[in-house]
Length: 98
Image 1: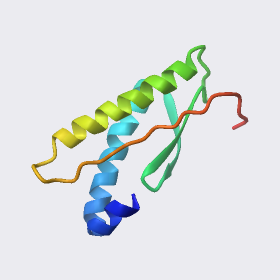
Image 2 (image 1 turned 180 degrees about the vertical axis):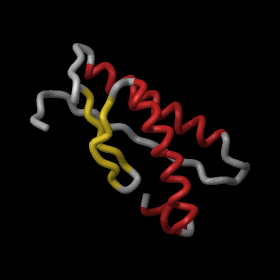
Image 3 (image 1 turned 90 degrees about the vertical axis):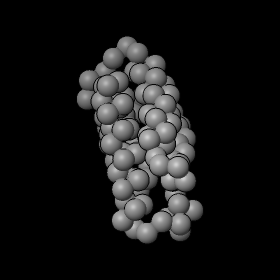
């Protein structure tokens, strides 16, 4: 985030963003999502690509909730006074051409 970037030096910010991306990627893989793009400190993820499932919308919601939990766990491992990350999840459903 912009606020976090203003508080941290670039190397420290990169460490935190990479840690977030790493735990998010693990969760997304567990629910068979596909990371289409890393967008700064955000992610664009597809479910149902390249292989569709009947429950892709449910997988997306479950993955989103699991990412929130994973970031909470990541924050719990920070030393006292360390940087706590916040995460928000947006989910859109429907057909799309990739």
